[in-house]
Amino acid sequence: MDRACWSGSPTAGVRCAGRNFERERIRIRQTVQIVLAAEEAELADRGFLLEAVRGIGIPFNIWAGYSAYHGFGNSSDLGMIQVPTEYVDMLLVLRRRRIRTFCEIGVDFGGFTALTAAYLKRMCGLEEYHCVDVRPRFVDGEFYERILPLVFHVPATSNDLCGRAFDAVFCDGDHSYWWTKRDFLNLGRYARIFCLHDIKAHEYDNLEGGVTRFWAEFKESFRDRCSILEISHSGPDWMGIGIAFLREPL
Ligand SMILES: C[S@@+](CC[C@H](N)C(=O)[O-])C[C@H]1O[C@@H](n2cnc3c(N)ncnc32)[C@H](O)[C@@H]1O
Image 1 (cartoon, rainbow, N blue to C red):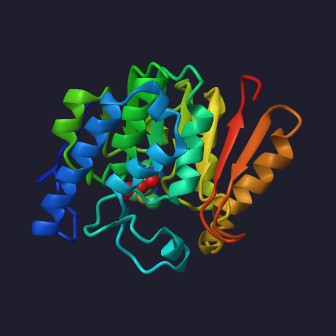
Image 2: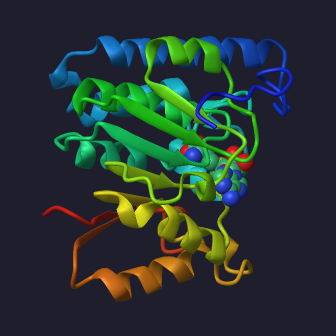
């Protein structure tokens, strides 16, 4: 399925609706537009990018790991579920790459998607940003489709796109060991750059070993074949982004 399948309200599933939701939705739109209009020098600046993440926000929750990111909160469920500095450093790693096609597995409400697509469009010549998710929760999809090259596969999994070769894949869907491995086998291994979120996230260890088990096995198998980077700013047991340059030097 190559187009959005908006089942019901585009905001279906958003728990925190109302005034906060509307305000935050607009704030995210404005942030994305600022990034699209930014100078290249700004987009290479870590401080500017952190401000952009602040504009998108991280969803309100009580995770201890977020205590260092006071001021980044989004007062609704919207935002991106990332450690801000990890995310920004990933963008800075990707910024000099040619990334025409990108696939995000697990887009959720779309805060990560909108900012990442805007950044890659400005810096990497992005032509297609494929959004894969089992749940139709993406907020403001009709708006972002007009200004970003989004292609929706919702509801879908990596099974539905198996074998497609994207320039880069960011995997953040089902965090069980078997799904992480399947996402890699379906899409990640065909990409030039494979990014995996939650490489340190031991809260998924009960899911057949979770993402951490897959990442350990992946490194064991691929460390002689490609450069692998780990971005982790939150202690040994939380989040973290792995980046593997499967078909090009670091
Ligand atoms: C942690 S959220 C993604 C967060 C988002 N990437 C961000 O950075 O803000 C995980 C998402 O994966 C979706 N998901 C769960 N299992 C999936 C699967 N097998 N394939 C694709 N998406 C899946 C969920 O519906 C949810 O929206």
